[in-house]
Amino acid sequence: MANHVFNEVNFHGPDSDLMVAAHLFEQMEACQPKTEEGQWPHFFIEMPRRFFADIEAAHLPGKLRVEYQTDWYPNPEDLVTIAAHFALDFESTYVEHGNGYYGACRYKYDEGNLLHTWLEEHDFAQIGFDDQTRDYLYKEQRFKFQGNCYEYVLKEKLDSLEQSTRISRGR
Image 1 (cartoon, rainbow, N blue to C red):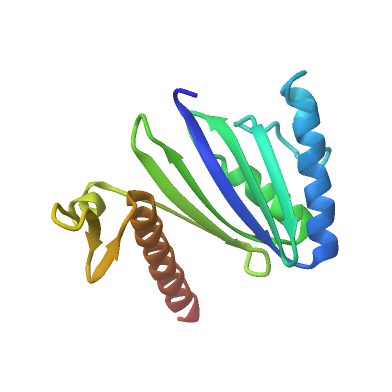
Image 2: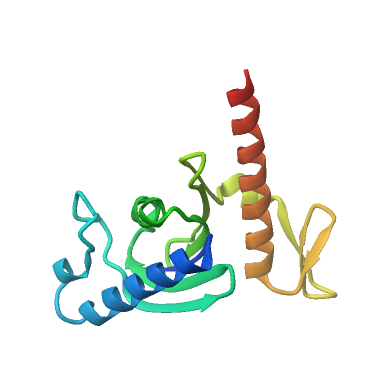
């Protein structure tokens, strides 16, 4: 789909809460073809900005993996609303290839803190390509696939952001 953001989120928490959240996403997917308004659960105070489309959810022990699409932009605020309702943590990534949006979010329920970062020009400038091996290069790391490289950079940025947030809270 053109100008659709591909989102992937992994919720973490107790299996009983993850199963209830998985059921919510199943209900949301069932409503999706009919009307956007029918998709939103009762605990949303405001109607979300982004519609979840083509939802696929898989509950695994200790994790709920959800893949879906939104139009034009990601929707981390909506993910926070869902995670907070079920007392879950999450990590998510998103990509919109047409405009080059690559980003990631991390939310910890106990801290009530959303971290959100994305790749910027200076991040792309640090990524190289080895024509001989066909590898993407970032610092001392080598990646066969561009997406794996981007995910690594995003995780590094989130970890750094989390560390700086902890330091500033400790003061």
